[in-house]
Picture (cartoon, one colour):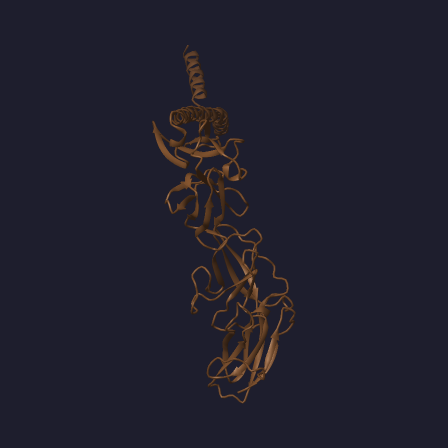
Length: 442
């Protein structure tokens, strides 16, 4: 009897011990991985559904805001609808929506931009476009609504005229949101998305001008304050004006050697330019005579925005011409390389480039080291009316320097001078393969 009881007890303990063993570590890890995969599979469509639900809700609210604004404009007289572009915010629950309204006159015979219409067109409508955006749109397009309001049978005053002003970037694309100011009235408008602003009911005359003055932008004259005028406005006619305007670009130029040097584009060791900075000349179709010299900003008569600073040389602001700028050191005519490669510039950025100098070794005979040695280029062009002079060392031993291309005269003198033609000279060119050499008497 006791034996049977003992055996039963041992069986019970074995069963209980087996039940308490639980899961192994491998089983637990597999369970965790399966649970993670299941959670990921469920979470992805859930997150997508939440984003879609939010996007739909935002679009519904935005559509209501756009519709309400369109109805408000339809209730106004056509001429009472503010021309140009304006924006404002509307908070709804925990989201701030931005409403942007653009209103512009369009000709009777089309719905195109007034700035692109024929000269003899007559204004007949005002097109109103409302766009509504909100934060974190995640690729969802803004909600847009449009309406076209007629000016009626009578239209605008036939004894007065209109002026359409187009503001375009370097690619000919209209710039929206630019403030155009009309003189002498003082009226101003923001250009629409197509870069067009239209002023109406103007008394006929030739005393008008328009201007844009946006920080960080310049016109083809490298001016931030771009003024176009005088402009003539004729009665019952759409007069036109156009301004090329874009974000300012800059050039950062460093000195290299002529391409024939070995190694190419490297100044020989020990040859360095004088401490006085060289002017930089740029070539572009934007300039009246194709070239323009930019003197050092520290020189007498230098004008901010039309001079070069620092080393490497820096020039800014520049209109970001799609054709780029040819650049070289020096302002005299023979400083230009045979075929300067245009440096492409980017709106709103400074582009790195190079300008080549040629090396020259000046040997001073009989000098005592007390008097300066000068390299002088006489006047030879409108951009070089006073010539150029640089102190390259003192009258003792060998002087190594680097200068712009062209013919340079060398002389020992207390101050810069104008060469008579009898002084030692060296002609530096892009085809040089080794530094030039000249001997002067100390």
